[in-house]
Length: 218
Image (tube, rainbow, N blue to C red; front, side):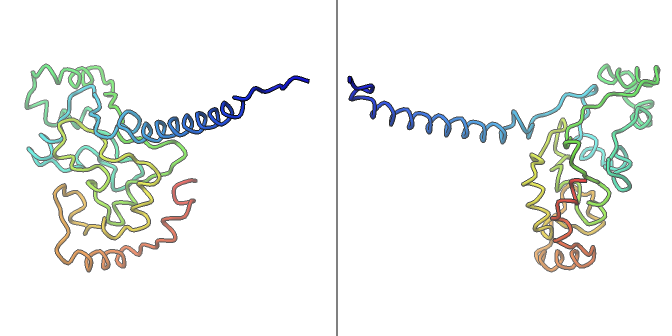
C-alpha cells in the first residue's frame, strides 16, 4: 500500500502550525493596538460641533466657570449641555453678527435646540454620575483634562474600564478640596499625601464599595 503522506508532510504540518500561531499573534496584536488607538478611543481627536466653541477662549480667556454651561454637574448624573438661552445671554450683546454664530441665532429664532455632539459617552450599561464624583472630591480636570487649554473639545482619556479602576482602586491622589473642584490648574501642595488622607476620611470613601461591580453596572 503506497504511503498517504510524502516525506515532506511533517515539515508542512509543523510549518502550518507556526504560520497559524504567528497569524493569530499578529491579529491579536493588531486588535490590541487598534482598540487603544485614537481611531477607536477618540482620545486627542477634536470633535466637530454645530458651533466651533472654544473652551480655551471661554474658560481661560474669559474666566467662565464650568457650571455656567454644565448646569447640572453637581446635582445629577449628566453634567448637561448648554442651551441656546445660555449662549444668547452673552451673544445677544457681543459678536451679534459673527457668521460662525449663525447656528446659535437660527436656533434662537426657530426655538430648535442645538444638537451638540457628545465627546465623553459611556455605554448604556455603565452607570456614571457626575454629582457623586464631585461630591467625593473629584475635579473636572481629573477626567476631562485641561479643558481651559483646548481650542475644540476632545477626550483626554480612553474611559476604558481599566482607566476607571485605576482611580477607584487608589482615589487619594485624585482628590481635591471643594474650592478646587472646578479649577483647571490646581496642583496639590507639597504635603499632598496628608491632604489626600484627610480628604479620604472627610468624604468617607470606602475602597470596597467603589470597586464593587454593582457600583457601575446596575
